[in-house]
Each structure stands twice: as C-alpha cells, then as structure tokens.
Length: 355
Image (cartoon, rainbow, N blue to C red; front, side):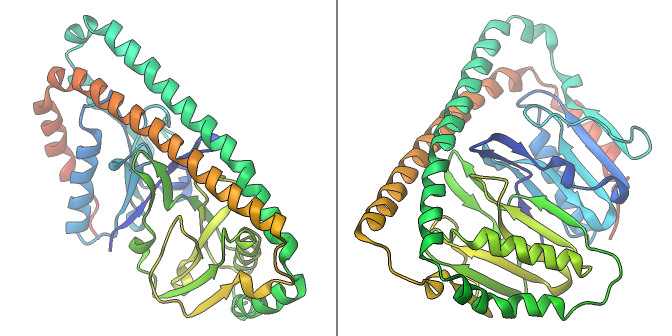
C-alpha cells in the first residue's frame, strides 16, 4: 500500500524541512536528486518512477509538496534503499555521498536557455512576488501560534495531573512490556498533514495501520506531551518510531507510528479528522479537574476564532503563491524539450530496484 507524506511544511517557523529524514545515509542504496526549474516535469517524472516501483512489488512513499498538495517533492521505496527527491528551492538538496549512493539528474538541461533569457524580467518579478506571498503566509501563521499556545495553557490548567496519568498509564505499560531489544530504536520525522493553498490537508488514512490509539479533546493541547513520553519509551525499548509533526509548530509531535506494532497513535481534533476505529481512546476532557470559568471559555472561543481566521489568511496567501507559480511554469513549459526527459526515463527505468 502506498503511503502519502509531506517532507516539508509551511509553518509558523517558516518553511520547515525533514528532507534529511526521507532516507538516512546508512539506509541509502541509491538517491537521485532532481534539478531543474519550474515546469520541467519533475513531479510527473517522480510519479512515473513511483508507479514503476509499485508495479515491481515495492511499497512506495509519495512525498507531497505542501505548497501544491497535488505535486510531488519526492518518492521513496525504503525497503529497497531507493529515493528520488526534488532538490530545488526552497528545499535545496545536494548529494551527501556523491557517486557512492547519490546522483543528480538535471532536467533543466533540456531547457531552451536562449528563449528564457528574453523573459528574465518577467521571471524575476514572478519569483519576487511568490516569495512575498510565502513570507506573508508565514507571518500569519506566526501570529496564530501564540493563540493556540494560550489555549493550551488554559487547557493544561483545567487538567487533574493524577487523573491524566492514571488514564495514560496503561498506554505506557503496553510499551514497557515489549522490553526485549538491547539497542534503542531509531526515530524518523515527517509531516502527514500540511497547511496548503487548499487549506489543511492530511494523509492519515494512507497509513492503513492495523491498530489505532486516539487522543481526543478540544485542541488536544496536552497530547504533544503524552506523545513525547510514548516516543521516549518506545525508543528506549528498542522500537523504531515515526514521529509525525504538527504543521503549525513543527517542534511538536502530533502523531506517532510504531512499525513493530503496526500502531498509529493519533491526535484527533477538527483540523485532521481520522475516522478509523480506535482500540483505545484517551479523551482529555475526562482528565479535567475542573470546568473552565466564563472568562476562560471566552478566551478559548476568541483564540479558536482568531486562529482559524489567521489560518485562512495564510492559506489565501499560499493560494496566491500557487497561482503565481502556475504563471511561472507557463514561462518554462513551452521552452522545455520533453523528448529529452523521455530519454532520461527510458534509461532509468531498467535500473530501478525490484521488490
């Protein structure tokens, strides 16, 4: 089954990248870094590679672009140690092990550079306007983050810590029962949701996990702390962990996947609904020690409304950037020799790994 992730995100901290987590150096058999300008066919090329890998029996991760969720920034067949990624801005990637594992495929070599020289002024103006749209979106998200932090502080003040830990203890116990391996596990970070021109997009369903545990509650403010504890325990007891980070504040983990247990531990809130049946649910409201005061209720309501408003404005700015990027691609596409790209594909497909 194919999985869908985001290796980078539009966040309150700006563009945030987990590209170095796509395929660690020690697991890399071959990584191809695609270069070239907009409209040269990088995303389409990667889709063809991904389809070919799936046809050869390999599980494939499709790594989507947070600035255009229908476009790809990479694909990975981790069991075969293979990945292909877009190495252009804003996620500039260069070979880590040139020749030994990494190589560059420059689709920009098939551009009509002379034809583009005459459009330099238009291209530069579009690039500057696109950069301005992204900067504006990041300012909106940066303004929204303190509102969520304030709500999280209010929610924390409502919690009865002993009650919360009592509800949470069986989750930790399940992990500690698996004490068997002598070496600590490995942690990988990625986004499974993103703030995009189309709003909040998530691919939780693509995990297809056999088991699901769910943490629920308004804003689920304390979930990140519980997930941090679970992550620590899992690693300590030799389990590999995939940490799926918050698209607003990437310093916080929003979901965990434990491959050894085929277990997805998810935060459930209105920004990323996940309908799969959960074998365990921890509702944070059940751990409250008291109900919010009228002033706290008003603050929570204000924070939610203003957060949503700023989030919408950020998405509008990203949508404007996407429309301008489409104009930029329109400058490149007519000046691209796609026959050259097809020749690259013909040469590459026979060398792709087999499951």
